[in-house]
Image (tube, rainbow, N blue to C red; front, side, top):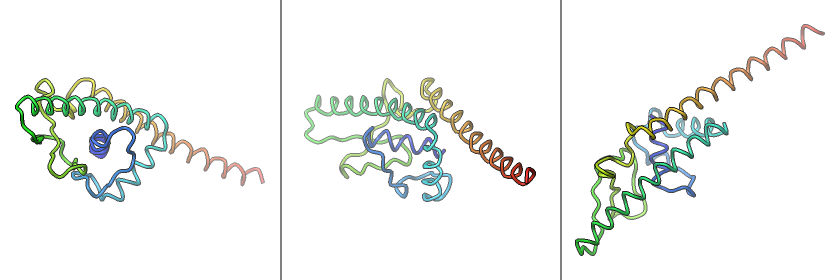
Length: 156
């Protein structure tokens, strides 16, 4: 849940915006500060970070296409203002303009952040695999460190 909310928010903000206002995210599995620490820890692992960036890029492209499509529809109707209706994107708040809500549906009838989509599902599975590997790396480092400490005392 944390990773999903994080990548949704990052996709909306864009590739060059890395700061997250954790208090603006809803549906987090823990308090915002704990989620921030957890994601910072996980992003410390290069494989995990690359997998997250791949999914963010994929979602950003889908989001951009959705915005393009909605703006085209809006201009085709000779409507001066952009009216975009939000049906998905739970937990993502648009801080750019209060007049514009985030449109998320009908990218060929599919939400831009549909985690049931095959390619998105595969990218998310890769992130979760990297998350598990990051945890294993940390635990193996802890075991090795404890073993080295124990070895020092035995040799003395």
